[in-house]
Picture 1 (cartoon, rainbow, N blue to C red):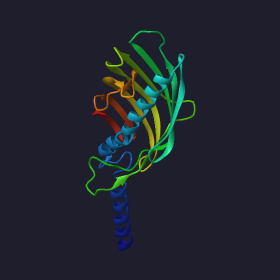
Picture 2 (picture 1 turned 90 degrees about the vertical axis):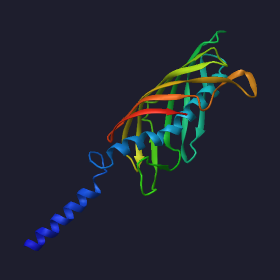
Picture 3 (picture 1 turned 30 degrees about the horizontal axis):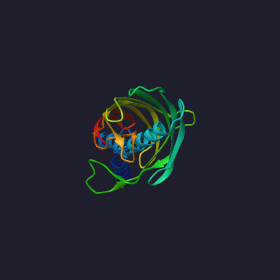
Picture 4 (picture 1 turned 45 degrees about the vertical axis):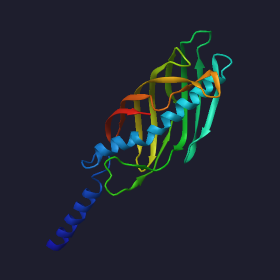
Amino acid sequence: MTGTLKKTRVALAAVTFLCAGCPGGDVNTEADAELAYVGFDPILSHIMDLGFAGFNAAGSANIPTQEDDAPGDGTIAVDGQVDQGNSDNKGMRLDVALDDYFDGPVDSPANDDETAYEIVYSTADGAPLDCDLQLKNFPDGTLEGTVSGTVVMTGDLTGDLVLDLAIDGETDPDADDAEKVTRAAGTTQVTGTATSDYGEYAVDVEI
């Protein structure tokens, strides 16, 4: 009987160790909270690129839906409205739908074994991400706004990721058409929080 109890305790200890990085565990929770956002971060650039494409293509208050494939797998669709008129200060109100969006493998910032993680992001039907952007003095001006809502993670991390992000950056004239506007890459500061079962991650990155 003693031998059986000893084996059982060893087995339970092994299970506890293996699950320490799961939601609610104590070892990798902080790193996983960051990883949940790191996997999403490239999607922000994709959102804004499609948003600006819709802004430039809009012939009315409603922008034509902009759809694209994710680099790895899945799709993204952006639609919404833009301000009309001749002012060089305008706003965009965008709805962003993700369908099994996979950008590609990502490394955890705290990963010591060089393992690449695969995280897939989706929005629920009827619950797109909200992206509100304000352009001032465009095309050579500034950009500010917010991205908020919930995406569902599957793959190596699972569960809801709740985003509450602020955006602050610059805009440039389009290289092919000076009457159109693009986001100045590398000038956009993203701050806020990304909250999941793994914890709350304070976002402060430049894209």
